[in-house]
Amino acid sequence: MKQLKIPAVFMRGGTSNAIVFKQQDLPADRTLWPEIFLAAQGSPDPFARQLNGMGGGISSLSKVCVIGPPSRDDADIDYTFAQIGVRDRSVSFASNCGNMSSAMAPYAVDEGLVKVKGNKATVRIHNTNTKKIIVSHFDLDQGFAAVDGDYVMPGVAEPGAKVQLDFLEPGGAITGALLPTGQAMDVFDLPGLREVEASVVDVAMAVVFVDASALGLEGTELPEEIDAMGGVMDRLEALRREAGYRAGIADSPEAMAKQPAAISPGIVCGPMDAPTLSGETIAAQCGDLVVRIVSNGNTHRALPATGSVCSAVAARNPAGAPLRNDGAGGVGKQARRRLARRVGNALPYPAPAVRGLRLRPRLEGARLGRGRGRGHSEFASY
Image (cartoon, rainbow, N blue to C red; front, side):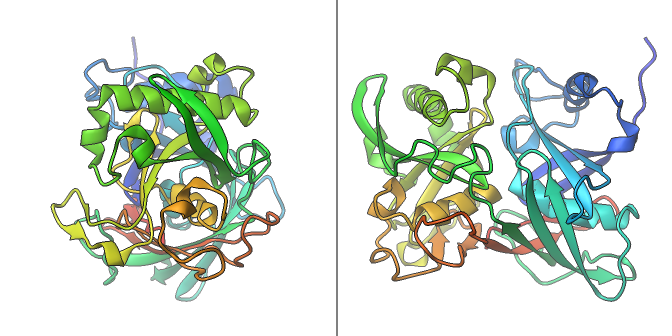
């Protein structure tokens, strides 16, 4: 059968990468998109290598982005995100990817979709998944997104130019409510465990936060170690499904199996010496929280950008799980939360605990890698 050719760009955004399509190059019938995306990424692959496509074998490297003209007057572009399953045929439009969000405005500028002048650009992105606006700020070099710079992003080999993202009013991105279960803390019964406390928070993404100790973990285990713990992963999946049901994402915990990206488990503990993938150790005094996010069945290799926003805002909640162990001295003492996944510092501001949704977390410290027009964008959750 003759292969279908569709123009696309392969880009890195933060600690993720994705295939980026222009909406105009895809079929108008969006029900045809999932099959195209699965084929492009090489899914499903029972060996989790995605050798027949561009996927990298883990959730953070199996993503697709679509850029189109804005459907809102307050945006410059529309951006639609799809999380692609690795071993299965799942294609989820239920959430956004903050890492890839950092690449969208540089892509739009380099592809001529947004006209800019001068040496700095500000681009307003409408994420269609969450119906939220993200404002991207970055330097320009001869009319293109700057690539070279001295910003060092942990988890990325070389320094580069910085990108800053403002997530405007990110509360209720998935469910419409900052605390979608109606309370700051819920109690869950998990396989082999009873009365496990966890907090369901929806800011930029929906996360159910649980103390590492409740799962028999220290909280500093590396992602591969957690992924290899079958019992822990089963409990986290059970927690994810029940939390999604209580948050109103699905009609039952069983139905949540079809929405693997709509809500993610977050494992938290207080300040501890924490190893990183590079072999270095982050000293306990360098962070207020140690966080691990499980995304689409994999423990994320770095804290997701949207997960950084959600973790920082959740830590402002005096009754929620993350704040209990953060050692930061209580609500109001500190507007800055340092998340010890060595992705950066999360700044939720203004700083009211969980009152209202007009929160405006700023993420600073993205960087663009080498290769103009192919986007290699790097994002830090600062």
